[in-house]
Image (tube, rainbow, N blue to C red; front, top):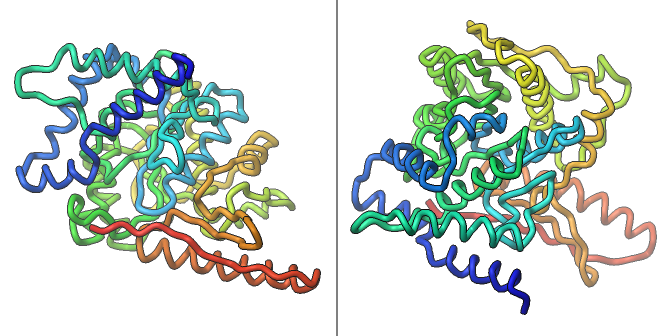
Length: 378
């Protein structure tokens, strides 16, 4: 075993020894700890690992929250920006196979060598500054710190950051000056932390909005939209709505063939296109898109250049509306974890498996089809 592999494997073992997100949630519930303390502690931890807020904001951030589709939207946004020539960083959760999938440079998970190197830099820096009775950060917070350290140190100039849970008190919300924020479809999730109503959950998600920073949302239910508008007015954040993706046919005769399967991805793609456009315009001039909005403001369509088209078509996001075949069985895999998401996954599965069956019957072949999805308890 090489020292590099050993370093990575030891890093994963040390990381797994940190308390899990589930345990963290239970600890918060038992201790009735104020969630707002999380961001104060996160700011302190950032400083301990040698990252200032100015450095963090300087990597040019797209911050994305939501209930459904935030991972896909983030992946599409990163792909578009990469096709436009940016050096991209992408932080997401959870991972499918290896933890290093959560921290990506130029669309690819960081190497085992890089993961091990940065893990121990962060681990040692935090360990050396622990106060009496203090513990190392929990799993997700540690990885967030590590991702920010990687992106700053590696000279990223476009970072797409996916919120973990909620938004307002999420570890990633230590970001104070994103270039643009995105909100995907809202619904009921993580009720133990976020609340039991769509209004409460929307308030939590809207917490990523920042002063004079444009926020783009997909169309939302009326109650959720009302909360988003209230929160936007409170912090003076311009709030926009992404237009339907298929309406772009009025601009181009040919829609891109999205690299991500499923009808729902058109909504995510529309949001990703708008986030990318605003990001690039504000990266050139931060004074753009800062005028407060009133009422429902739907953004105009974006004419899709070759870079946009390639970004949408080449995007890959394993485990999300993902089809794979093995030993005569076709698996349809999605990370659905809410009732609405499972419904969308089943709709996609029914459409795709019907087409697959027809194709194989025409070729006198047989196969079995299986839908796999994720369901977490609250």
